Image (cartoon, rainbow, N blue to C red):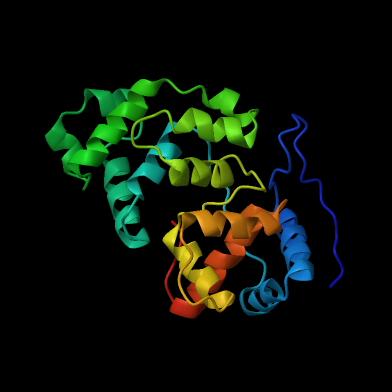
Length: 221
């Protein structure tokens, strides 16, 4: 496979930024050259799509909505929140419990949504922060764990070398693709992904795509 190199670097020196489908193709080709199992996955799935999302409060709130629920349920809840206008900090802080519960938020997620709305995160500054700083900033907010912070860095900030090892679909996909006896837990999954740097986000994309092929289910919102 001929590899074409794209401008996938950020001028602020935060590492590679996924800006185009070409960046995904470059990363997928690198992974396939390094690991035969990724080459196999790539043959089945094709290059995974660039899943860039806008930055900011609404999309981080969407990641909280997606915690520990199916992708179908998360989409349905988020659609109802958008219809109710509950996607800004002011709207969330002004809403009472019944208003926030109506779209499908649990009591715990209502608390998380309010914590995020009150946190006053400087989203512009996050765009220029190193990956570790992005994660450290976000996990200070109640309800945002490493999975949510990593998903935000991957999709909203486009960081090319971030992985979410606590994602169940990634764990199950890795078990199937690498013929593991058990689904790897977070710590061994994180260690496993070190070999996929500097394209760990693309590796996650390949694993999610492989999961969809293997199970006919979406693994990521």
